[in-house]
Image (cartoon, rainbow, N blue to C red; front, side, top):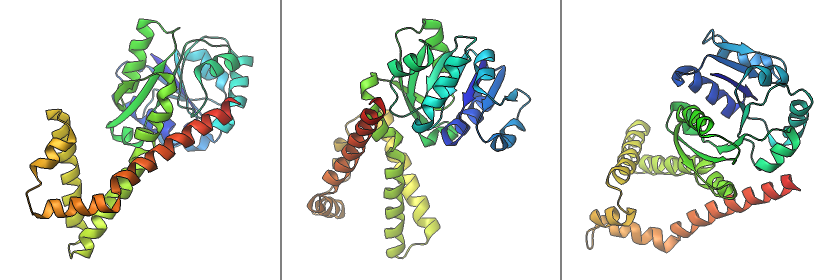
Length: 269
């Protein structure tokens, strides 16, 4: 399978590295970026990497093409695809806010999937929201899933729900990192070293998430298991509720969702 990536920035670069490392079906990986000097470190990793200077060469040689450019650069890219099309590859778009029907209209292509990956994909622990067009065959859907599985888990959603996916999992890691940072900082305030605080917090978070994943229970059930009458945990939970932490987190994520929808509307207009 020949796969192309147009736009090898943060997410495009993660895709390139994961495909080289984990995609057994990969025969050649075609890379194209407006700053080709950035691609040297990737091309040095494998003789399967081919660096090209224009989108036409990617489309001509690849069955699957990942578009990972900024939304403001997308129309120029779409025009170059439409004007130089010699092949009809499957398009996998990471471009925020540009809907499948708009991509089809601007490129002349019909086999399209939109995705929203996230940063933990860099180590194969990400989760990718995935919305395919009706024009894709079962074989093509299977190939797309194999490509995405190199990044981690896949969750198929309706295209209209990608704004929510952006808020929960696309932007979500940033909120997790802020929370982790605050937990480590309070460990410092209580007299622990940075290394000890970090190890305790990462182990606690990782173990708690894995417990939820394995047992499948509602988070509230486990919260009550460690909450004794008159104890330390209930005192902390009371403080969190009094300060409105739950509402603050929900508002932050919902504001992120609303902004994602605004961007969608702006780009669609």
